[in-house]
Figure 1 (cartoon, rainbow, N blue to C red):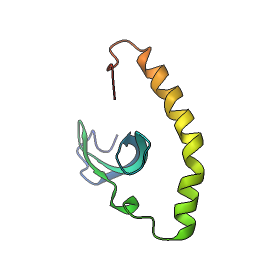
Figure 2: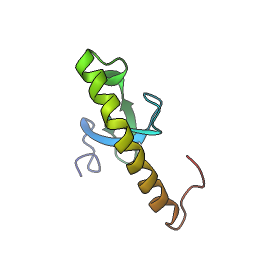
Figure 3: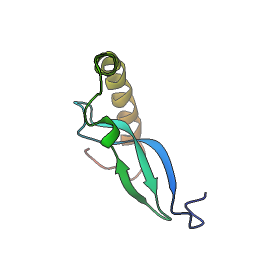
Length: 85
């Protein structure tokens, strides 16, 4: 709501199309503007900083892939959905 009313410093996390991993979508910080996403801030995730972060990312991928498929399948059933990612 803040962004809709003109606040230019609104940051949130969202699943966005991404090439950071093999997954088609990944949670990233976004900067919102009044009527759109102004920027995707993915620099925090470009290079996992340590062994544990890399290991955790690998562990979540199988579950995330299933969730992406379910979400994409659901979205495709909605009127006006794009035909591909």
